[in-house]
Length: 185
Image 1: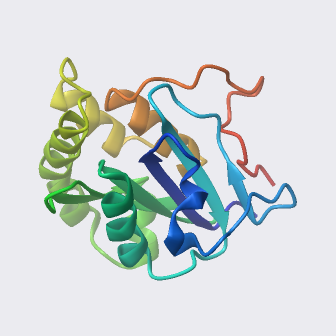
Image 2: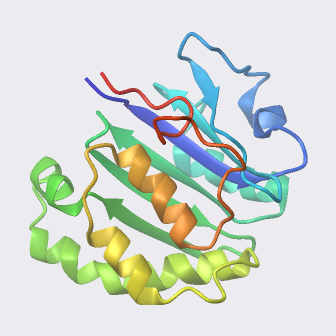
């Protein structure tokens, strides 16, 4: 059994959990909320095992408003598949499936339909990263390839997507190269 929950990614000088819409939530080493290694520039990923304190769309809008920076949330199911939704100040929005073959099987959406969306999803994701001041030298083909790829752990693919979009790599990585908080059961 893998990870099911949300991965929240955004930029702040303070821990994202201090945002008022998280209602005083705290990191919990026992599996409730865990942080991944931060990326330079204040970029943070928080892993919520289970559900967010509110609808993911609401949390995403509130996070962008609170930080004044682009943010995204990946809703992961059993580490098999994730739907990533990104938003930037001003309302620019994108979404993309990670592990599209699995997404097609789990959502009863035809794989050709999901595959046809990849070029537009990749272009919008890259535009989002560029609005964050990153991704200037990234080719949209790199993002398309990432969105078409497969990883047994959708959360690992989310980490790869962020790196390919031009977000700086975490300063330290775990020895097994999995993001902090990733379940491997």
